[in-house]
Length: 251
Image (cartoon, rainbow, N blue to C red; front, side):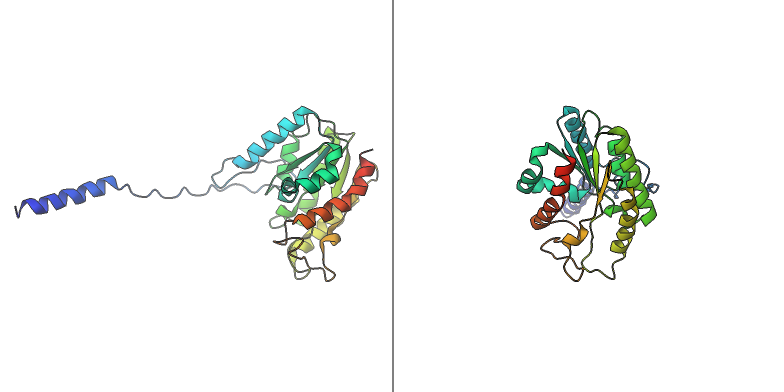
């Protein structure tokens, strides 16, 4: 009996070791080459595969475009996508124009460029497109590169939808304080460059950034809770600021 007990304990320990699989090490992130802001590219995840959320949203937008109903198209990143949670403001401001919201969180200029060259502007004939993109490029790309990415997007919209008027919005301010604020300074340079795309006929540049700011140039949490994305009050400011110009472009 004294010999049997150690044997049983040893067998139990051996069985436990066999049934407890060693933890698998996390897959290493795939090193991807940098994406140029003016060259169309899909959005990839750390695994080196196309971001599934990006792909699914793009497919939805292509399907909406194929329906051929949208007369007003919004293109952008999460700030534009955020209109989806502000339906009452959206419907009241833009509902009469049969609008479509083609905003995807995290998008950069190269991603919007890829989307519009791969079906999101096919099958529709919108009267106008509202474009606001570039803030997600601000951490990695130069002001010149971001502006050039926006320029190529505008040129692509013009080529694919020559009848559409483009309401090109200055990239919104970001970060709580006016200074020091390197990202906001870079975006000011971007805006100064893309303002030159305004021709008063096909491309209409509009900078509404100051409408979001306090008198000292800071951003309020009431308007941008995280100093980047808009609250309902922020979306109302956006709607009010562009509605007169859109009424003119949608005639």
